[in-house]
Image 1 (cartoon, protein in one colour):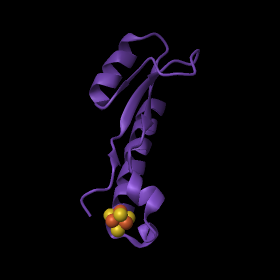
Image 2 (cartoon, rainbow, N blue to C red):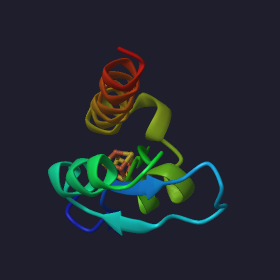
Image 3 (tube, rainbow, N blue to C red):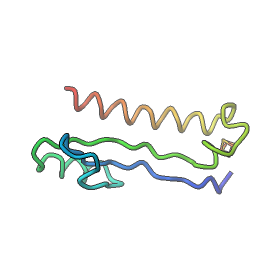
Length: 86
Ligand code: SF4
């Protein structure tokens, strides 16, 4: 299905002292560069999603395409969390 109302994955540069992001990028490298230059900052991944699949499709839990995308998005978050913990 072509029209799935895609929202891209975002990378928010966060500081513990703020509730809102310092800045939000759609490019992980740019977010990591700003976080490295900003005292105490870290990158929070905000996984994107296909809005139509996630909220309006009755067969989403049986759809291979959507389930593969969910797994890929989860692995991006996990990889970044592991990298930050190291
Ligand atoms: S979950 Fe699968 S079938 Fe449903 S809208 Fe998304 S791509 Fe199409």
